[in-house]
Every structure is written in structure tokens, then in C-alpha cells.
View 1 (cartoon, rainbow, N blue to C red):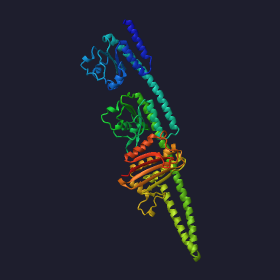
View 2 (spheres, one colour):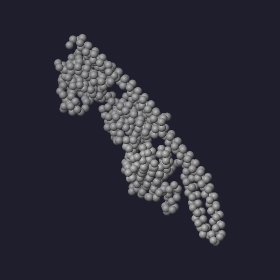
View 3 (cartoon, rainbow, N blue to C red):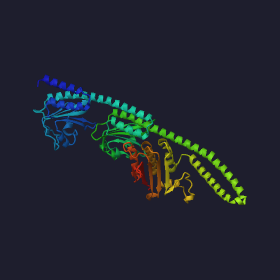
View 4 (tube, rainbow, N blue to C red):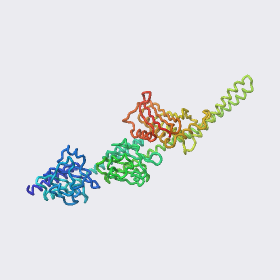
Length: 562
């Protein structure tokens, strides 16, 4: 081929590469052009990761069935590792090289070989492999491929910059969407689920998870979206792992491959490859960790990915702060309402009962002085006893309403959840709490009639430890939240029961509504998964389905006490 024609073909191939802004198209075009210009039967480009192993492999000449039987791309070792960072490697016969280790079973036999590095910003981006040219490769072929590799490097940089610009546009759109949803008053878990789903999509990740504080000092995956989400929900992250380290330092981290980790502290993550950790920071405090994951063999995350992910993670922290502020406002309103009720009970109800008691006492004394009406005195005496009992009960209620917030028992915590749920439900849910079949009444201190040494509330706190109590409250909260969002119910009943104690005892929670029934497509999957995880953690069970009446939904959760 005349030199002028060869140069024209090389120039045309180079221009063709730089004309595209799609990275996959550039890489495929580079390999096809290289084989076309040299006449090679086989060609491939191995894009390298930061360890020098093959991250992306684009090939020409091997049919799909053979490629499938080979199973995976070359790792970049053996002869391929001898391709210099500058220049080329030219061999008349691959099999004569000392580093040749043999062909994998279905691999086609190859003879002549030409290897050329593709360099970007003084770093080896990948390696071009060409094999089996009739008559063998020449030095002219090698110089031409070096020039084509330079053009391919320019095209790759342009495609990467274009991709980065498009990614930033998508990140900005996601950020605006998140801000809008947060300002509209979206609930905490719905906001975090939306953030995980949108961030996973825009980052082209296979999975996105959010790690949040759980019971005590433990941190757990509470939100997950994408491949393997159902397996990751409930995973506990150890104190000295990557997630907790990122949280403590307030700085994100990129991991080239989870599968290469020397010790896998969270085994649920072993299926993934590249990972990105972004702390959810608010005013210098870590509230959680956003983790993006790609499957093994996926492209590594870049510093640009980490930068934008950290910004979105900060917005997720804002979602948590807003939810906490709304909850604090609800609690404040509830406490103000409790104070008002206690004042009304003390200032109005008790005073009126006192006045009624005085009138009855006067009537009793008058009746007792007349033998004809002496029988009335007994009736009035009984009425006075009932008035005194009512005063005592009201005083107990007032004391309960005014008690400090510290060391609040399980009964009081459950009543608060029921009170807070009124806003979402537009009505007050029914709350029934029992211990060994004995209902806990509003005047929880009164148990003398039952012949017990302790009140039901005290028995409840004695039998249910703090860890299980936290889960019981969380289950009631989630059940009421689901009823408020999806049930369209006219009534909701919460039943919490404790029977027995220790290893033979059990605590059960049932949340039943008369609404439209279960709709799995609209019910929050991660919230329900969390309830299942909480049950499994204690060796218990969780179910969600139709109520016994056939209408509405019944959420059932129970665990052993021991």
C-alpha cells in the first residue's frame, strides 16, 4: 500500500474516532479501525483499573459463542504485562515468548502479536492487542497504531468530559428534585427512599444504600435500592468499618472493589465491586452514610462522582434534620396539649367533683338524721365513695401528664405514638395494651383490684427489655404510618400484648385497619423490611396481609421476651 494512501486511511480513522462523544462508540471504533488498518484478524482493547487489571474489554474477531465459553476477559498478566508504557511490543509468534502461559480451552490459536499502550495524561489508560495479520506485523504497523492510540486518547478524553458534563446536569436535576420534595414536607423515610433511587440512577450504580443509627450504638442499613437491596436491608455496619470511618472523619471514600477486601466485615456487600461512601453531614455531625455500589467488573467511581455524591448526601442529612424538627414540633404540640388537659382536669373536673361531694355529704347527713330516709344515706355514702375514687384517679392522670420526660415507660411511649398519629390519620387510633390478658387502663397505677403487687405498666417494663421495647415502639410507629398513607381507613386499632416472661414469654403487636387492604406497590418496602429484620433479630415473626374480616389490613409482629 502506498505510504500516502496509508496515511490517508490513518488520518480518516483518527478523525472518525474524535467525531464521536459516546465512550463505548469510541472504544469500539478504535479496535475496529486498528484491525482494519493493519489487516489483523483479532483485536482488543483492555481498559485498566488503578491496579492494572482489566476493567473493560472491547474485542473484534472472536464470535459471541467463543467469548461466552471463555467466560471472562484477560486479566492483563502474562505477555500483556510486558507491553511497555511507551512504545510497543511486536512478536512474530506469541507462543515463543517466555511469558506465554498457554491458551484457555476454547481460545482460538493466534500467532503474530502487536501490543500498544493507550496513554491519557501520562497514565496508561489501556492496552491495544492485535493478533494474526497475514504475513506478520511490521514496524510501520506499530508506528501507525501508536499514532492511532494517541488519537483514541484524545477521543476518550473528549467523551469523558462530555459524559461528566451530562452527569453534572443530571446531578443538578436530581438535586433540585430532592430540594423540592423536602420543602413539600415529604416524610423522612419516603425522602430517603427517593434519594437512594434517584442517586443510584444518575450515578449508574447497581445499588444504593443508606446507613443510619439503629438501637444503641449500632448502625444499620435502613434504606436500599437496586440489585440485592432485599439482602442488604438490616445489615449491621461494624464500628471500625469503612462506613463508620467515613462517618467519623466526615470525608467520603472510593473503593475499587469490595470483592478484593482482605476482610469482609459486612458479608452482604461481597457481591459488589466498586463502591463509593459519602457521609451525610449536617453542621459537622454525621447522621448517616450514603453508599453507592456497582457489581463486580463494573467501572470504578471517580473523584467527580464522589464530589457530587457528597453534596447529595448532605441533602439527605437535611431530610433527616427536617424530619426530626417536624417530630419535635409534634411532640411539643402534644406536650402542650397534655399540659392543657392536666390544667383543665385539675382546675375544673376536680373542683366540680369536690363541690358535688360536699353537696352529697350535706344530703347524707340530713338523710341520716331522719329515720324514714336513713336508707338513702347508704346510697349517698356509696356515691361519695365513687366521687372520692374519681378524684383519686384524676389526680393520678394529672400526675402522669405532668411527669418529667425522663425514663418514660413503654406504655407512655406507645400512647405518645398513638397521639402523634392523629395528624396523619385525621382521627385517633384505638390503643389496647394488655399483660397476661389484663388490660392496661388509663389509670395505670390502679391495680389493687386485681390483687397484683405491681401495675400492668410496671409489669410491662419489667418483662420487656429496652432493646425489644424500642422495636415495639418502632413497629407501632411504622404500622400507623402505613395506615395513614395507604389504608384510607375510618378506624385503626393497635393491640400490644405481653404474655409470660423470660424465654417462655412473648410480646405481640397488631395494627389493624378497615381500609382498602394491602397494596405492595405503594407500601414502603424498606419500612416493612425493617420490621421483618427487627423480628428476625429476636427470633420472632412478622406478617402483613388481609385482616380476618377480609377487609382492611392486619400487621402482625411478635417476638420472644427471652
